[in-house]
Image 1: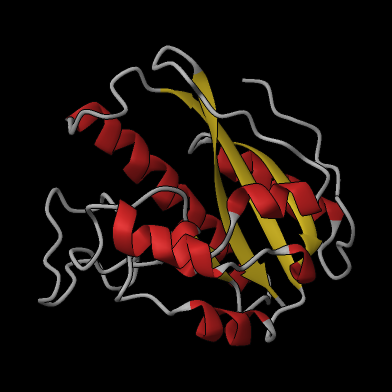
Image 2: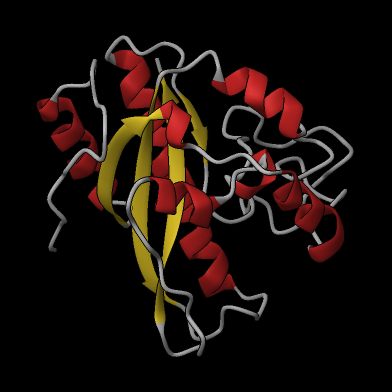
Length: 198
């Protein structure tokens, strides 16, 4: 399995290269191909992202990891002020049945979700007690979410990057990166998670 070189975008003070390598090694087991540390100020929070959750997604008001169960943009901005560093997690997958609701797609989502949470746990054990994950895609831990009843997996429950009002493409542009949009179901695409660290 090939992994990308770990190259910080701007600022990775406080996180050693060896720790990033350890995270990447563990992340490879879950499909995470690259980890990039960067300054928290590069995260783009936008009102329109929250708007798209409300009016463009069938998960709205049906899932513990999506709005309105997640903080709105103003609250997100306040939360981000409590952190100084973030880790961008990058995976790549090909999913020709992306728009189908099937077990294979769900298994991939759960795998990446659990990988992100496991890296958060590793950071916690290394002394980064404020580490908090924002996962890629929507929660798939349950075939059907129990929302608004109690979550079956409260310890693993995390907001997705988008449900946290983060403009992923804008954030990538702030970091000098681009991400191509898959226009055909046969094309592979990147998916992104973020771990907030202090």
